[in-house]
Structures are given as C-alpha cells and as structure tokens.
Image (cartoon, rainbow, N blue to C red):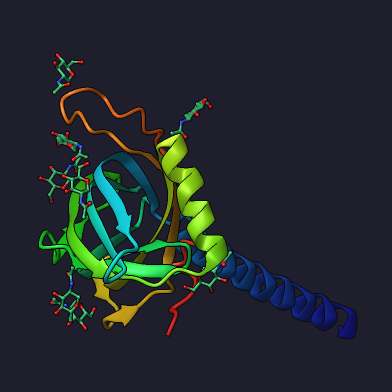
Amino acid sequence: MSGGCACCFCLLCNTFLCFTLAFFTFCYILTSDEPKFSITDASLTQFNFTNTDNSTLHYNLALNITIRNSNKMVGIYYRRIQVIANYRQKTFAMVNLTSAPFYQGHKNTTTLHAVFEGQQLAVFGESNISQLNSDTAASIYSIDLQLALQVRARYFSFKTAEYSSSKIDCKLQVPLSLNETSPSGFNVTMCGNVHILTDRGD
Ligand SMILES: *[C@@H]1O[C@H](CO)[C@@H](O)[C@H](O)[C@H]1NC(C)=O
Ligand SMILES: *[C@@H]1O[C@H](CO)[C@@H](O)[C@H](O)[C@H]1NC(C)=O
Ligand SMILES: *[C@@H]1O[C@H](CO)[C@@H](O)[C@H](O)[C@H]1NC(C)=O
Ligand SMILES: *[C@@H]1O[C@H](CO)[C@@H](O)[C@H](O)[C@H]1NC(C)=O
Ligand SMILES: *[C@@H]1O[C@H](CO)[C@@H](O)[C@H](O)[C@H]1NC(C)=O
Ligand SMILES: *[C@@H]1O[C@H](CO)[C@@H](O)[C@H](O)[C@H]1NC(C)=O
Ligand SMILES: *[C@@H]1O[C@H](CO)[C@@H](O)[C@H](O)[C@H]1NC(C)=O
Ligand SMILES: *[C@@H]1O[C@H](CO)[C@@H](O)[C@H](O)[C@H]1NC(C)=O
C-alpha cells in the first residue's frame, strides 16, 4: 500500500520535473535566437581632419544596415534606432533612423539606410593623430558603430513594454571611395553584442 503511494509520488515528481524542463527549454528557444545585425554596405566619400585653426572632422558616410529576424516565434517592434559613429573612441556623429518605428515579424529581413554627413569639432591626442595619418595613408578607416535600440518584443499575441536594449557594436573597416560610382570594396560586417531578447539593458 505504502509502496504504491511512494510510486505515485515519484510519478508526480517526474511529471513536474518534465514540465519544468519543458518550460525552461521553451523559454530558451524563445529568447536564444537573437536577430542578426550586419552592415551590408558602406560608402565613405569624405573623412578628413584639419588640425589648423579649429580641429574639425569632415565626414560623409552612408550605410546599409540589415536586420534578420530568424526567430520563429518572436516579432520585434523597433520603436527607435539611434546609430552612433565613433572614431578612436570619439563620437563624431549620431542619427536617429527615420525608418523606425516599424515591426519586424518572424523570418523577415529588413534593410535600413543611415547617412552621416557634416562636420564635427574633434580633439585627438598624439597617438590618435598618428593612427589617423596611417589610416589616411591606407585609405581605410576603423569606424565603430553603436546601435542603441528601443524595442518591444512580441511573443504570440503578448507584447512587452518598451525597453532599451544594450548597445550593439559594429566594428567597421571602411575604405575611402572618392569615386562614388565604383564599388568601394567594403566587406560585409556582422555586428556583435546583440542581446535584445535576453538582456533588457538599461
Ligand atoms: C544600399 O542599398 C541601396 C539599395 O537598397 C543601394 O542603392 C545603395 O548603393 C546601397 N549602399 C549604400 C552605401 O547606401
Ligand atoms: C576634404 O576633402 C574633400 C575631398 O577630398 C574636399 O572637397 C574638402 O574641401 C576637404 N575638406 C577640408 C576641410 O579639407
Ligand atoms: C574657428 O572657430 C571660431 C569660433 O568658433 C570661428 O570664429 C572661426 O571662424 C573658426 N575658424 C575656422 C577656420 O573655421
Ligand atoms: C534621437 O533619439 C534619442 C533617444 O533615443 C533622443 O534623446 C534624441 O533627442 C533624438 N535626436 C533627434 C535629433 O531626434
Ligand atoms: C517582411 O516585412 C515586410 C514589412 O512588414 C512585409 O512587407 C514583407 O512581406 C515581410 N516578408 C516576409 C517574408 O514575411
Ligand atoms: C584616443 O582618444 C580617446 C579619447 O577621445 C582616448 O580615450 C584614447 O585613449 C585615445 N587613444 C589613443 C591611442 O591615444
Ligand atoms: C568612377 O569610376 C567609374 C567606373 O570605374 C569610371 O567610369 C568613372 O570615370 C570614374 N569617375 C571618376 C570621376 O573618376
Ligand atoms: C576584405 O576582405 C579581404 C579578404 O579577407 C581583405 O583582403 C580586404 O583587405 C578586406 N577589405 C577591407 C576594406 O577590410
């Protein structure tokens, strides 16, 4: 009699364990498949720094940013996308993409355009100046982008509140192309630090 009861209890425990495991696996599947961000094209037609008078950086950079949501269950509302352009840890330009807000469903790919054009007062230290000079000699500049997103995630019919995710990093090597019509020789670059679904950032 008591043996039967113990068995019954055992079965209950196992069932419970199975459900918990299944639940966590399900949650894992929902959140582990982050969208993929890549810079599919970049065209840099001006990047000159004048040290005489005021230290000014003149820049003209156009980008194609591709976002692929391969998650089968989660859709993402991009409420705001801010793209921050840095050179040698110095932010020289920021834009808010006008294509946001938009919704990206499952298994969808979206290409966004960002253009940075203008000038910025910039102070670079000695070593950064010499790095800039060698980049200029090679005609390839190391430009780091950060993408700051405000999003809402959609799980089936449930939508989360709006939140900011941690910043996405894209480390680019952009060749200077003075001739806008010829291909620039930019290599497609994947972005890192994508934690939109797993880490709600700040
Ligand atoms: C981006 O994509 C468009 C087509 O969607 C293309 O015309 C353009 O040359 C691409 N590159 C840049 C840097 O904008
Ligand atoms: C930067 O370079 C472009 C093209 O090479 C030129 O038109 C522009 O006048 C330059 N700007 C400065 C401030 O030197
Ligand atoms: C440098 O900055 C000062 C003050 O902002 C401005 O009056 C001057 O015209 C600038 N010089 C150049 C060459 O842009
Ligand atoms: C861009 O978005 C940020 C917040 O994401 C906001 O603080 C900033 O004012 C916006 N800039 C412009 C020019 O709209
Ligand atoms: C991707 O999303 C766009 C805009 O919402 C839509 O027009 C397009 O049909 C979608 N593509 C796929 C394959 O679902
Ligand atoms: C370049 O400048 C940034 C600040 O703008 C500084 O943090 C960094 O250490 C500098 N790098 C070098 C190599 O001097
Ligand atoms: C730009 O490149 C194209 C094709 O390579 C060439 O036909 C054109 O003459 C070039 N333009 C200039 C201004 O160099
Ligand atoms: C693109 O990739 C090729 C092959 O890896 C490399 O030789 C070339 O320098 C890269 N170009 C840039 C601009 O990084």
